[in-house]
Image 1: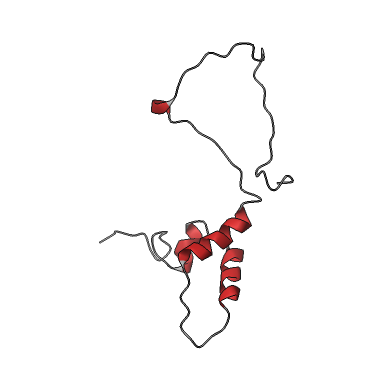
Image 2: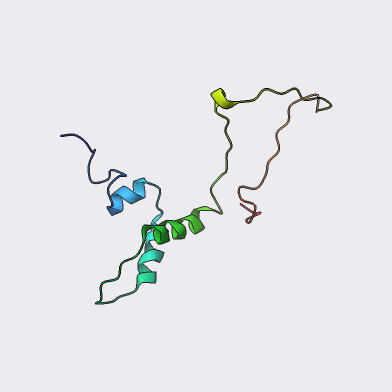
Length: 98
């Protein structure tokens, strides 16, 4: 019925789907290795997979802040700099080199 685009749709729990959702292959490999080989049924939570992925992308993922126009608050700044300026800050507070 055309509800999804294919097996790589991010709503599907397929490898292609979760990669499109933002999962790094390195995170998937670590998750699989943590499970280990076993004949017994081993159920893991999605949270574990995404927390492993977060550890991988945190050092390199830039952080951005945005303000929704409808919820903005106007203010008047006094004694500020005369000219606007740009300051480069680390991408993550725990990873200064990032």
